[in-house]
Image (cartoon, rainbow, N blue to C red):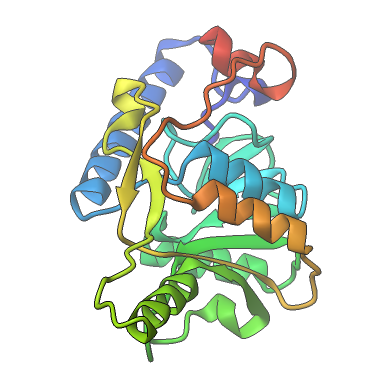
Length: 232
C-alpha cells in the first residue's frame, strides 16, 4: 500500500481515509516502541549528504511520519510511503525490522547503487549481510579510537565519546529540529564496486559531527518538497 496521494492510490473516500488513519496509528506505535528501545532518527543534514553520494532517489527505512520529503520515494519493507520501488537507495539499517532487513537484502542482491547508514561495529561482531558485497567508507568510531590512543600517548585517560548528532526522541510529533547527541557511533557502507570521493566523505563527517545545535530547516516551495512544506 502506498500512502501518498501523488500516485493516486489513496483517494478521498472514507475507506481510503480510514486505511490511512489505521496505517499512521500502526506507524506511530511502531516508532514509539523503536525509540523506547533507543533508536534515534538521523538528522536531515546527514540524510541529504547520504543522498548525494550516489544521487539516491529512494530511502528505505524510517516511518510514514518521519521519512524526509526530499527523496522521490520512501519505503520500508512492504510498505511504500510514496513514489516508486526502484532507484538508487539510502538504507537506514537500524530502523528496519529483521524481516525488513532480510527483504531489502534480497532486493539489493541485483543492484549496486545503495548506501547503508548503520551503527559502527565495535570489535568482533557478527558480519551483517550487506558487508559481504560492500565496503565501509566512513566510521567515526575509528576516529574516536584514534583520539583516545593519542590521549593515552599524552598521559591522559580522557575518553573520546564523539558519537553523532541525531534527532530528538518524538521529534516527528513535536516538530523539533534541535539535535541531540547519541553515543552510538555511525558507519556508512556502499557497494564495493562504487567509487566515493574524499570530498563526499568529508561532507559526511561534517554532517555527523556533534554540534548541539539545530538540524536544517530550509523551506523549499519548489520541487518534490513543495507538498511537504505546504502541509498537503
